[in-house]
Amino acid sequence: MRIIGGEYRSRLIEMPKGVEIRPTQDRVREAVFNIIGDVSEKKVLDLFAGSGASGLEAISRGAAHSTFVDVNSRCTGTIKTNIESLNIQEYQYDIIRGNVFAVLMRLEKEAEVFDMVFVDPPYYKDLARKCLICLDYYDILSPNALIIVEHFKKDSLETDLEVLKLEKEKMYGDTAITIFKKGA
Image (cartoon, rainbow, N blue to C red; front, side, top):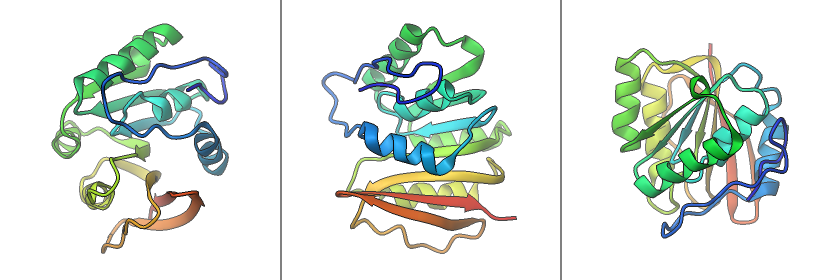
């Protein structure tokens, strides 16, 4: 897997070994960043981060900071390895090992605010929808924040959301990318 654009373009990143993850294909990640546009100076949250590809791509394209969250120590270790291989500065990232839902609650208590959230949970477990509900509830999103959800195309994200509004949905084979925006 590699970084698609920006400062670290074409640099390879490692995948966690011995972990069952489904990495976002390069072409899908490229399409996502083409859709969302400029990420300069944005604060990014990468949930179910795996290798950290989405957050690393955002930093490569000028994001100010990425916070990576994954429950698996092999994933967080791989993210750290990838950050070190790219020579990313300490002030540009945080790595949190923990349950995504507990971390979201903690981030709200710490008054953290994000401009962009990548959600890429394991398929078939209803985690994407549950994560959307939490992101809608917890006050961690800046005005006009984007939430980019990668999920199986047949997984339903239908739920009553108060602050998040559906912006766009694109299909790439069995993968769906659904983008929500925080409403005014």
